[in-house]
Image (tube, rainbow over all chains, first blue to last red; front, side, top):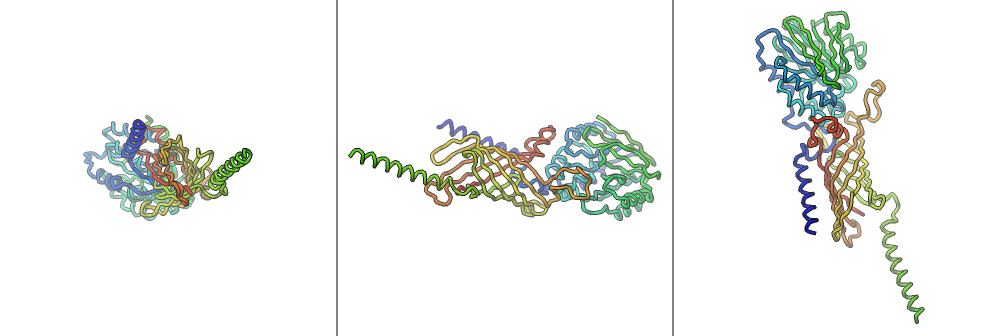
Length: 268
Length: 197
């Protein structure tokens, strides 16, 4: 009997130890949107880090990674590779950083990104809108649309998710942001869905295309289609780049020069 | 004399066995739809609180429950979350100590939720097979329960208190396919009570 009591005690003790090692002792629903304080305002924190980077030439490099969904091993492989390359100054994520828009997936992404030794920014993707992802994204990262400038280049991060967000992309905001394009060496737009992809109807596609063209955007970067393409799709001065998803570890390094850019696709 | 004694004995046996039988039938032969117990659970990915009814099957080897779970706005930081769950618990074995019985338990639950940008059927604007449904989730758990028999109680005959450690199907899948997702990241706890009628 004494032995049995000891066994029960041991079982209880191991349960208590297991509980205290859990990240969240209690979870109420996969649809929760309760982001921990430490994980909030990630965009603002990283924008500050990017602002603090000192560059002494017109030329610099940044990485573009997109559509990691639940390919967490590939994500880690890519992060490790980016860490090894000192010349990459920051990383942009092209959306679908989650698969079902679940808080847990956002937390896993955020935790893995702690391994990255450089600032990173994200644009929201269609998958990130699922479940309560829209609310989680807002708390964990911040605004869906934002812009920043780096080394006299302007970066505009644009939420162009249509179906899942139940709203049209805010093209007025996009135009306003690009209005001052003449002040910058180059202007680069990052949006999850390329304008020539399914969720865009013809009106939206034309609208996006003309905003890019009228505002001298050099490069429009996207994910969503899970394949590589680089083209002046509309026979104008705007280059459209799509980068594959992270089913295999693959990402893009963009080299920005004074008035031009080129890039290399890294397959790891 | 002897026949009278034997007759008395038979009557006595019949009487006692009959009362015994009546006793058990009053427990067992309830209409099939009358639940065996009520349940209230805290946490476990099926609601902040969930409430429902349960049935015992296969000589108490399976406990099946229908539950409604609720997460208020103050907890979800989103809309209210309403979850309907069918939960199945299997006691692995039972150790009896007087009026207390201890069982390690394991089981799974299937939940459905709609209304938080989740859908059972893909809305019309999407191309076919654009997404799988995101309204269903399965949870798996292991734990332990303590049963207490309330002797001589007429309404509530006994109660379980249980504690579980569990996870959601998608989380478990991520932990299996990737070493970047730690087991400690995906596990959480639930506690609850079953009240036997």
